Amino acid sequence: MKNARLAAILNLIPFGYGYLYLGNYWTFGATFLAGICTFLMGFVLGPVAIDWLLMTLFAKCGYTFAIWCPGERPIWSSIIILIVWLVPPIILLLITAKNAFNKAISPNTILDDPAKTQNSTTEEQIEEIAQDKPDDGD
Image (cartoon, rainbow, N blue to C red; front, side, top):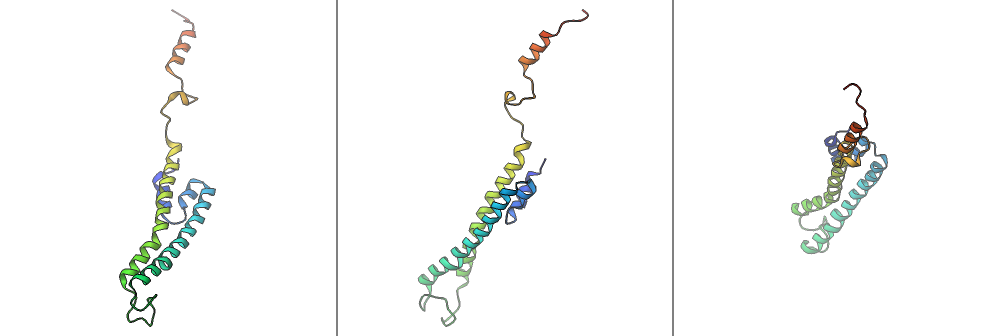
């Protein structure tokens, strides 16, 4: 029995270590590759695309916050770039943490319908067994 909370917390660390804890090696590998891709995607979205958008809208000396520009890149633009850089990995972390939690609790749950379980006997089966048994001493 695996701890569902531990699996979810391990998946909040980048690259899906909760799946490794659960023994889902293929899912871990896919999540590891997706984690690398989301960091690269965040790098393209944040420092490249958003920086270009901010430069074209707010830069006073052309299309760049360059060294020769009178002033540095404003701090608010760096904060926006950092936030956009972190959005794709955070989305992946939250989705995989929830999925690892659900995978960890799925073998621990009991089926609601007793007819679906093969080893449990229903009340009708118990009555049939009781009727088939002969009385031995009364």
